[in-house]
Structures are given as C-alpha cells and as structure tokens.
Image (cartoon, rainbow, N blue to C red; front, top):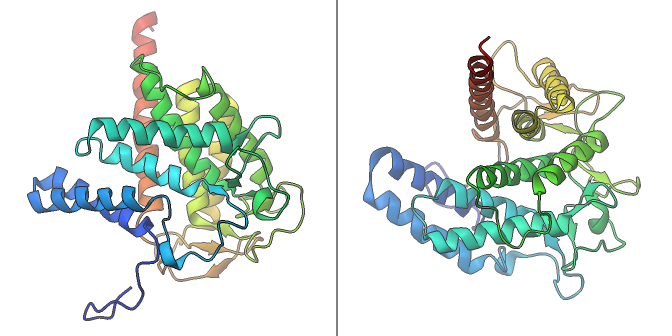
Length: 311
C-alpha cells in the first residue's frame, strides 16, 4: 500500500505479496523475454525460500513456543509458485518444494478418519483442542486440493508419481476430500459456502465466519470441474453446477459487471466496492480461465471418445 506518489504506507509484514510478485515477474519474462523481470522473479523466489520458516518475521503475532501449528497457506502458495515458475527455477529445488508441499497437505491436513481438511494442525498432524485446531476453511481447502490434484494427476499421466506421499493413489483421496469439504461447507439454508467453520460445530472465533466470499466460490468452481474432468464423477459436476448457479445469481453485478466480493449469509452484498485491500484482479479471472480451459479439454475428451468408437 502506497501513497499516490509511491511512498509506502505499510511495511511488508509477510511473504505472500512477494509470492504473487515473483510469479508476476516470471510471467512477464515469459511473455516478453525481459531479462530484468527474470532476475527479479528468481531473486524474489530465493528470498521467499529463505524466509519460509518464519514468513512474518518480527510481525508475527503468535508465540510459536506456546502452540506451534502448521498452516495450509504456505504449502499452497509454494506449490502454486513451483508450477508457475517451472521454467525458471532450479529443477531440484522445484521437485523438493513440490514434494514437501504435497506431503504436508496429504499427510497432515487431510484427515480421512474425520473426513475433513483442517486449516491448522500440529507438526504430527494431530488436532489441538482449541479453536485454531478445529478450524475449517472450505474455500482455502478447495483451492489447496485442486492445486495438489492438478500436480498429482499430471505426474501420474507422466508415470512419475511423487515420492514420499502417504497414499499410493492420492487422486482418490483428494477427490474424497473435495466432496467432504463441499458437504461440510455448503450453507443448506441460504446456499453458498461458509467462510469458516468449527469442526465440532462450536461457534468459530471469526466474526465473518458465515459470510459468503467471492474467492471461496471461484476456487470451488475450479476444484469441482477439475475433479470431474479427471474422474467423470457426476457428483462433482453437480457441485460445479450448484456453485455456478449461486455465483452468477449472487456475486455478479448485472448493471456494472464484475463480482461483488462480500455477501451476508443470506446472499445480499455486504460491501459494494469491487476492489479493496484483499480483493484484486486475481481469483475471478484465474477461475474463469481455468474453467474455460477445462471445458475445452472436456470437449476434446468427448471428441476423442467419439472418434475411437466411430460415433
């Protein structure tokens, strides 16, 4: 955040802005060949790796020694960066980061016994008996799951499965986790996905827990459609259809375009601004592009099947 003249107003208090910047410069280099953009992307990525164990540094609020928890945010962003910067970063580093990120999500955050994806877990994957230990975030879980599903499915197609991941066939587990998340996260009274939930059904400590946010639903569309494209399971397409109907009847602004970002639980817009500190030009266009690509692939799949059986 800066003044109009470009003077900073807020110190850089974590590395997530750096992550988006690294990918942006990497993409700019890919599109233009600009050497300086490549240098900035790689240097930024290197600094991120140096800070990943303590991403907020002196700005961290929590005292790690009191209750040390692992969050899904870092493996999620690391996995995304490794894929987006695949042509630039060292292959060994990319493989290591990819494997570590997927292993944390699959082995620690996905809990097959409880049929849930936990936002924060202890180092051994257990769930501390506290609000943070019971926290579920449907949108974030679906975003992480489709990232992992995309990588794992591509590796299986290449006959190069990732080493060190708990499940010998993680795609089935990932699909189940997507469906668990959808069932738990959907508001059966008003429609749409809750922002936060408590696994035990207690009131979450987040005041905005029952709001409906644009990015949650954008990532849900990607998760359901990717899962359907990979497996053909109709319940995934039904979840896509249900979510798609909700977003275009609630988030879309028919008069001025774009999506509202924040809805009350009942579905009315809470904030009519289309952009702000957290809502930028990212989740929605990415989701639309991903879904368009997946529909193209589905059409191609259907054409290939038709050609193979002579129809």
